[in-house]
Length: 219
Image 1 (tube, rainbow, N blue to C red):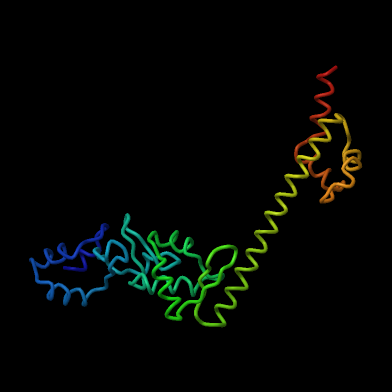
Image 2 (cartoon, rainbow, N blue to C red):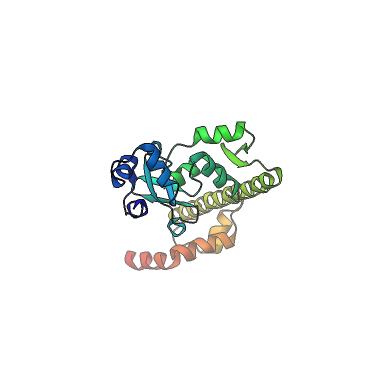
């Protein structure tokens, strides 16, 4: 009987389980619960229950019914530690909260104080890592590599924006200027802007065609 109630599309509360058993006592209801596969929510103070079915879990071992969330680990503490241990680059508090939809700071701090987790400030935020030294070191290296790639990408994007602006400024001051001429006018720019970069800007924004159309309009 309880299995059918738990398998409903909506989570159920303990009083609903008691009612399904004919207003059974708490002790009796818990005894029946132990006989069926079930989960208790890790939010809403564990108020809700549902059927435990492996196919319901996503790749993180989680699933939700509306705003009620469940984990294969049952407890939020165990879930937080598993998700940190299993992450290639560790996890930040913000990353975990995006997955779990609940505050996790207290659980991260408890795991750190108990030695189950490590933490290190990387990229301006605390990154939590597995307590196992070998796993934690691998996560740390991966996080640093990701940060380095992100910074390199941001630097490239900033330089690209600078190149576009400088090329356009030359064309505004000297309409009709060709890519080699623009490159010569930008000699000495810091950081350097060479012909390949100027040509890339011309190609991306079709500047030669725009200049030709502008010249024909002026005529």
